[in-house]
Image (cartoon, rainbow over all chains, first blue to last red; front, side):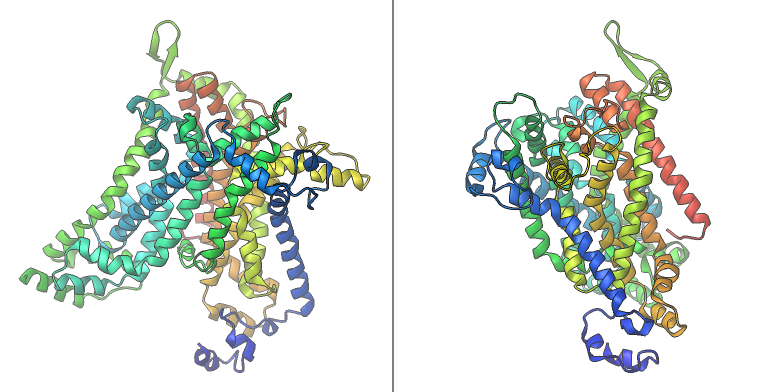
Length: 315
Length: 323
């Protein structure tokens, strides 16, 4: 990289810091960015970071409070007694509308099944579209992409009506199979397979007599791992966070997702004269819901932050 | 075995263009029968997705259209009623009140969010901000938070009298605003939506900006272009397809607004049963049991969204954008 930089007239002598940086941005001083601009932009970033973190900070602080303290003490700071463990115990022992642990287990199963399904189906389809020139390929691809314009809201109720006819309503497969249909993932996989699986390698494998399934599994899939991880992550998050689809097609408490259960608890908090106070319970449950995904984001940072895959969206 | 060898030789002779997947049509005639047969095998890779896609997306949509032409009466059962459901939906006003509100919502929320996201994405891309990596991580975190939890958090924080923000307002001697009154409710939903989706938009735009060749910025620098000019006149126009994509995705999302108003309804009394078209459809289907009518609303909503996205795409295409 540094030799390429040296060959260019503009950055004849890049500062050492600039060339050492992982990203190859043009050094700031070259286009007259003053220190003040840097400070102002950093300040704006900090302000937006505060806006972003406020609710997350609030939910962690609030989940440590007692019910009376929640409304009587300052919301953004802790107040004794510190009852996080009691609140957690309450969340996991409450059996209103099924149990929280059951919802969590359901959600984990749906999200994992949906995301694995979406990743497998879109990897195969993306590879098929990128590396095989079959008749009707373009039409078929455009047909799938057109589905991007169809709002989930428009097919959720019809989906429920079809489910009612074939007895898939309020069943686990009825909840997670729709998560496997992800046109965006097919698009991303096609772009990624097109760019990272060399045709020459596939042809070489064919000459060696390998079957198509074997070539896909042994040659293409290993080359597509970053895309597979990203697509899995995006679909896992989408399924984990989805509320509308399970809400419409499932009304069995045994099969509730976290979002469904939380929404029911949340409604309890607002019912006048409700004997049990669900406020802190809902807040603590919300905190438990978001923690695994936040941790996953931090662990898998290099996949989404460098945008290995989303870059394909520029087309 | 001989066939395999022939196919391989043929393949080697063929010059691969920069984007292999677009090579299709023009070179098709030169392909051997073997290669055509091999290409057909691609269908087997696409087929599993297509099967699930058709069963769980296409069939429900077709069924929605079919069932929307029927009406279920207490006496006489389900009968064909032509466009009656559509006439009722399109003329009742209940649908259009909600539709108008969500269009207003999209018209406010999407531009604000895109401007904020484009600004930060450009700053991160050019490395203007310090701690860019840290800020990108922080901005992306709301993507991990379900809309249900986001609505619950903002709802509690803004709740009249007891929420943390109304209390801060009171401490500062400011008038106590009713965030969930008729005047502010849509604003609160805009705030929640911006909080939820800006981070993902920043990451998409940032990634698009990163893929712009470095030489483009270099030559602009040689010409003496300043920061603001590089961003607004060079970088953002280059990633126009990504911006259009982000706009379309967010407009489609905004027009099917449901979760936030539905969950805020208990503390925001003026969330009516037809506050948004999706809410209207839900209530007609599950509260009133008018499934056929709800299907008609779903079809109309889908058509409105397709028309709005189509008009937007078309207007952008004429300006020379490529998608």
